[in-house]
Image (cartoon, rainbow, N blue to C red):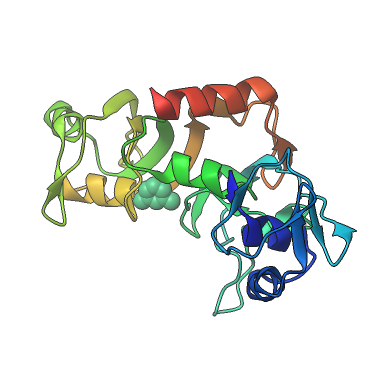
Length: 238
Ligand code: URA
């Protein structure tokens, strides 16, 4: 169920504020009855008209983008940098679900479904995010163990994480590993590794729940498959 003014605005008929005026002015009907109450909720099965015109609700779309480095994950940028919306069709006013840093690559979901975006972003929900991390120095066993148990960022302990596939590159004195977390605090992964003394050099999100980059090239996008969407919703609610 959505608020009537939101459904009207989402259809592209007019802004939400204008929709509120039209509702108050008695220009809107729901299933044939004039509705003037602003908080009225309707479902997509209801028939809504404005000034006698049938409102076609906008369809929801869900994309996964293989975000390249060098793009911001916002809808516009005050520094004029390229945004992830430059890489996807945007006739439906979609926006990113959460953020990846400018210099982070990997799985980024985009949608115009606010309920879904909020569900994914909520800290209560349990969707794994897996990152491939390249860092300075050699990641020691006790440091991995600390990261897995939780470290303090801004006075809050991070929740349990999984660290796996640790490898070392002797010549460049760097390490690689995968980390799986469920939270999504600002710069979370970079700050977690900083707490154990490793600066992150590159960061790539390789998985978001069941969604991976398999078969995708940097900068490419695709629609989420119905089973992926279903599983994401299921995980978030479990
Ligand atoms: N953690 C980070 O530090 N950066 C990201 O982009 C994602 C997770």
